[in-house]
Amino acid sequence: MPSLYVKGVYFINLDIRPDRLENMHKQLSSCKWDVTRVPAVRLEKEPAEIGYKLIPRLEGKKHVLSIWLSHRKALELALTNVQNEALILLEDDVKIDSTFWKDKLELPEKLPENWEILFFSPRFRVNKNGPLKNQTGSKWLKAPFGKEPVLLNSVRSKYVCTGAHFVVFRNSSVIKKVIEKMDSMDEIYDVDLFYLGSFKTFGIDNPKITTNSSLGSDHH
Image 1 (tube, rainbow, N blue to C red):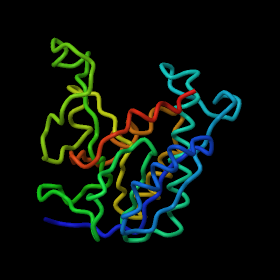
Image 2 (cartoon, rainbow, N blue to C red):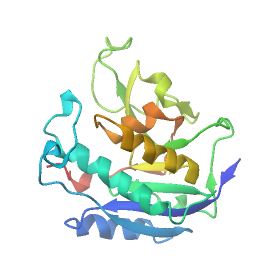
Image 3 (tube, rainbow, N blue to C red):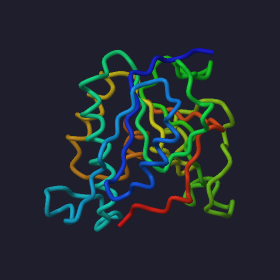
């Protein structure tokens, strides 16, 4: 099984959520790589007041821009340390089994060589406007592609996918590319959809990684 050397792990956490911070410290206690907390952005003003525009369906949702800016902040900080190594970026509602951490990050055999970003254990639900629309239910599905890596942009007509809770960026070149693309956007939208729609982003299901719904929401 191929593996990847990781330079560091950055996780995003609001100052007002010490419970999530404590949870992350516990989960990362056996991590083999340097760990850095990134104070998350929490906006009080409307996006337009600080010079940002959201796509029409997200107007008024400050949390979408807060998450976007938090990710950008973390990526910019990581550029000072990451070169040819990979970066792991976490949101603090991720749930990681303690046995996950090893000296290197294990990758699937069938992962294409041209990957740029990885979502570990992304979530899928049926796209109500897609070809599977007659299948009822909006709950998240059990990994529809099993253990095989899947190019997430290629399945968007069938599935709605989210997964920015555990993201791997291949190296500093990819990080720079992402930041430049972020800064060129006329309208802002969900950061996970940005990652999977604008880059060679693959989803990899891993039973040791999920999300922790018991922590509640930071949306405001």
